[in-house]
Image (cartoon, rainbow, N blue to C red; front, top):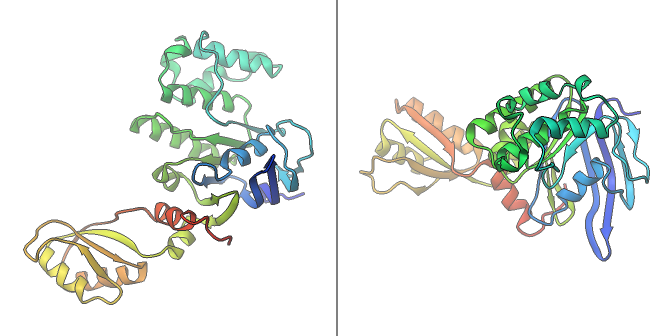
Length: 312
């Protein structure tokens, strides 16, 4: 029994007729980790999430969830909950009635599984008695998360949980997931929002045409990325431009004229950028803003998936 990983997959393959959805996929998710799953449309993300939730079975390979090998039966492993392609809700029922009905389907009394508790967790207490048909997309996503939490899962599998959420709602959901992870729950999140994944995840797996092209910590991904563009705002834009032009490995890609007072955009690897920042500080130029124009995760995603990528 693997006591370190909530999910351990080796060589997972899944086909639908002549279409190979997953082609020898390996995946490790440690306990108490929020693990991001990224890939273009058709990469195999939904299929992989379905395998974790027991909605499908692999044609080949080994899959172990929460220390138990997954067999060939279509059943959700004990301790696993979540949703794929959005939560399934009863539109004519209220939020509280939806959760009570789902609890009943699990063979439990709704009063003993914390319906009000999970509504409070996801911030829906004030609309608990409103019918789901009137909910916005973001509110339906939150209710779907509440439904998943009813089972008190040890592995939570979520497909686009921040879809339709405003900034406050997104922050609330991120907080819920971070607290769950801190308490030992493992979370697998699929999303097209790179900023969401960078804010939540310690590790990511990138899929392209059914294969893993990267899996590991975000820090490793950033270190392996190709050159990135960075926006640099300083107390002396003209001096900053001169120093950037004289720094090995740095190219100025946008900065207007030498009299421009706006931010400077430079391109380079992280070590070259570190060198530039050190030179600015030594020259007495204050760095007021330093941010990547495109996040390391998004840059790596584009680089690794544009031609199908190569396995790592």
